[in-house]
Structures are given as structure tokens and as C-alpha cells.
Length: 135
Image (cartoon, rainbow, N blue to C red):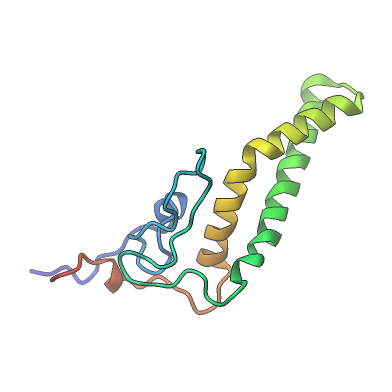
């Protein structure tokens, strides 16, 4: 008997950078932190969705990444102030820049994932595409 209510949860699919339409195929070919850099697949290996909706589509992800950076830097500045009480600007600059460098691969990946999951009109989850392919 076939289960017609087969659905995959959104949050685990988002965290693991799975396709927003079927939540099965990987969006990235490489790991987040590695020496090869991050390479994104052109299409979903499960449902065939083309990730780059139009030429230059992922330029919008830069704005999302910028918002991530601002939130991380403000959080780091508040944490430094609360934890150290220091007024030395070089302490703030060095720690905040180190955090920005360490989190840049995270920001790159999840700004694209967020763009596809929640900021792309007309791109929605289709549970019927989550099923295993039958050859």
C-alpha cells in the first residue's frame, strides 16, 4: 500500500542544504569547510530543479549574507563588551574580523539556501517529488 502523505521536514532539509522542492537532493557538491571551496550543483540530482533560477540569481544571496554578517558582528561586539568590559578598539576589531573570516563559508552556503527556501517566489516544497524514483 502506497503512503500518499509522505512528507520530509523542512528544518532538517534546510540545515543539510537539500533541494527546496523535493528535500532529497544535495545543493552543494563539497563540504562547507574544506580546501576545495564550495561548489554548488547546477541541478537537483533527485528532482532536476535548476538552482540558479536566472543568470545572476545568486547575487541576491549577497544581501542575505550581509545581514548574517551584521547580526554576527553585533552579537560578537555585545558579547565582547559583556564578557571583557574592555574599551580597546583593537580587541573588538581583531575578534570580530576573526569571527567574520571563520563564519564566511557558513554565510556563503546558508545565504543561498535561505534564498532558495524562503525568499524565492513560486518555489515550494512538493511532497510527491520526495518519493523514491521508480525505474
